[in-house]
Length: 211
Image (cartoon, rainbow, N blue to C red):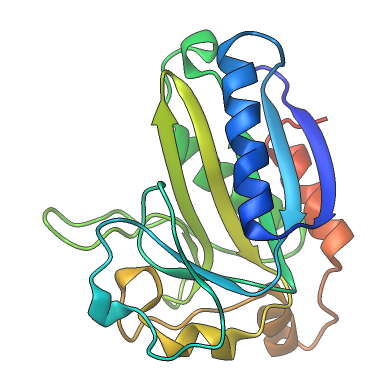
């Protein structure tokens, strides 16, 4: 795939980021900007797609709940997590399985950081296993995208030093009893320091061809 523009932001409130993303998508569709990867973080928020059953959401959560127009079920965003929003014109980039391309890019980035992770095939009629996983079945990266008018929006959430306890307060990704993990937890299990967010950003951007 052709190069993608890398844009680095700090912590951005979720609703502000979604409004900005809508503008990026409109401008990309109009040809005013090129493809871009926006790397950022969010204050604590739980987002969920339209097909998320109410029983999968937390009750009386102190963390805001926000309905979104992406694929996927409920997930948590917060400090220590690297968010990547992809605004790509698929009509110009040619036919591709964009989710598999993203999964493979994130697997490559994790390998650069020293971690073995995998993608998983969703069984026929089963709950989606889109994302990036450890070989032991822990989920490291959640992916939820939308394609409208040939342009993608939303993207992925990579747990770097995330508070994993927050994922236990609801049904994350529609997968009950599936443990979430982070690069920090994986590094601790290996007896080595966790990569920094800056290192994770660089590895992800390089693997996805974002410069």
